[in-house]
Image 1 (cartoon, rainbow, N blue to C red):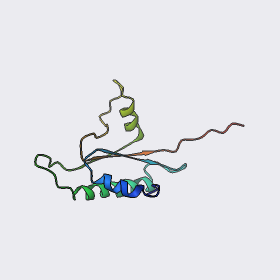
Image 2: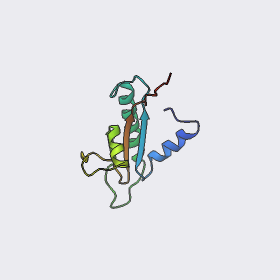
Image 3: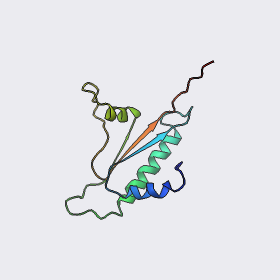
Image 4: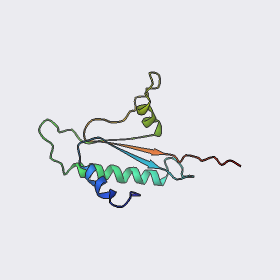
Amino acid sequence: MGLHDGRELVFLRALTGREPLLCLLRLPAGASPQGWLQQTWEGLTSWSFRSAQRFIRAPSGEGSAPEVRIGPEAMLHGFLKPSAIGSEGSSLALQSHSLNLIASGAVAQSTSS
């Protein structure tokens, strides 16, 4: 999944945790938003999260299903720099057993001559 050596196990363990997760996909230059790479990543990661959460036995009173939110880069920007005007209703899920998936386009680097 593009993680550094040894980080895959940490990621898989985090999928079974209670804490909300934020996963970012940095799209390569030239990749189209909502292309096959992003869709495959979102599907695989959300399926893995929901499957991992099934192994956790929820204590009484905590029977809600895990939540997965997939959103644009603007969702992350709205969370990091909130605005009174720009509340579009889509924000990061912060409750326990939640996963946020955001794909970020590659930043164009300008070259000076």
